[in-house]
Length: 146
Image 1 (cartoon, rainbow, N blue to C red):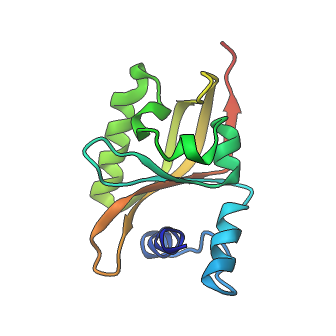
Image 2 (tube, helix red, strand yellow):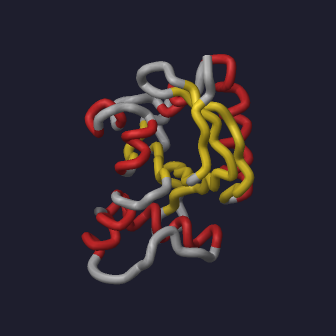
């Protein structure tokens, strides 16, 4: 629940918008985020960042379980040929606080490729504005044929 609040607070901090309706308890808000109809994913600040959050639709899209997802290095959501482009996008988000125009190809746990469009990527920060990770949300994607 604490991480969900950081995701929501940081999204509002950078974009001036709410990711989900902020009513009810923190538990209600965490549940709303997890069960939303759009993808929300995040990773921490490790040297090789590991995914630490994926909502229900993200887990379905990446064809994985929560346990598998949160042990996955974030870079593995992109194929090797797309990892440099992914790093440039994350660096741009780090420098600007957020971006709202990301488009790129990702890969599921089973190897299925999909195109993400109009993703918002933002820095997850704590109350002292210290970076705790990065997150992304998107509602537009299309499966790519092999």
